[in-house]
Length: 199
Image (cartoon, rainbow, N blue to C red):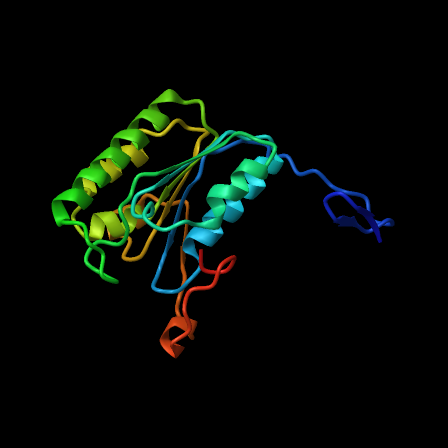
């Protein structure tokens, strides 16, 4: 195996690398939902891949913003255009979150306004609306507002919506939708969230 010591990228020396190129480019709507762990992680994997293709990316975090998470530092180390905007104030109504419903709604409205702006610019190849499904389910964002974002996206832009409880109307507009199902979760065993895996 060959590898680049600086980045530790390993290649098999006898297999030629194939570059795929679709005959027709399409901007996909991807929905990642369900009660299991890994929705944001999956979306960040797409961000990582998009970076490798030289794509311009924006991540708008609807609920996160009160607790440090590793992706904020990771994107600084990537050699590509990735913008993360953490507009949230934590998860509304759980884990002792101290902010009022009105404050959470105001934060969600800021996120929605940013999403409208970034989508309308048409400069991004991939936009992730992280935890927007939660925000809709909690009525911090109106369902019709989210549907307008999806319907109004440029044809070649990929749009990813994450979070539990995706509305059927959102799922009906998806090109790809995945449900992450919890089978076992460390939290239920009394294990605290761990850096690099959970945040």
